Image (cartoon, rainbow, N blue to C red; front, side, top):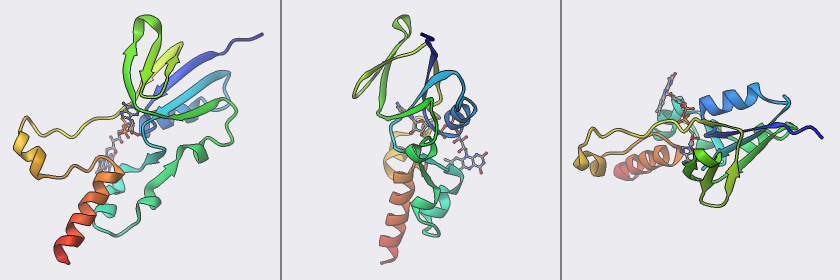
Length: 142
Ligand SMILES: Cc1cc2nc3c(=O)[nH]c(=O)nc-3n(C[C@H](O)[C@H](O)[C@H](O)COP(=O)(O)OP(=O)(O)OC[C@H]3O[C@@H](n4cnc5c(N)ncnc54)[C@H](O)[C@@H]3O)c2cc1C
């Protein structure tokens, strides 16, 4: 029986999603892991933050994106550790083995070492943060 190469992609952002789509229906087993269940179109977070569009307008569920794929699976979980010598990753829910691993986890907000700024400002790197800004502004006006 043929054993297909197993590719694990951590992160379903622009990079991870683009790669997964290019591997759709190829002779590979692909597992996309993301800690949230939807792809986020980050360039429009500011529109969510100022209340012009709903978060659902820029959130695309991974299960829907991959529902017709025969070789791509999606798992929602937070990757916590990579064990390269064992070709294994450890998540909060389970361990996954791989033949090839792609890390496409994006980046974090940089506060340039200013801890005070970290507490006093809002980030805008995920849907929850954009909603937090929207709620804060609306409440301030109310
Ligand atoms: C507000 C804003 C506006 C932007 N506007 C533009 C623009 O106009 N034009 C432009 O070209 N670019 C823009 N960008 C930049 C662009 O969105 C990023 O460059 C791009 O999203 C990076 O893609 P990525 O795949 O590397 O990471 P991301 O898109 O950030 O994806 C990373 C994914 O990894 C997941 N992840 C992270 N850690 C883990 C973990 N431990 N376990 C499981 N999953 C994990 C995250 O949930 C996320 O889904 C903007 C960014 C922001 C924040």
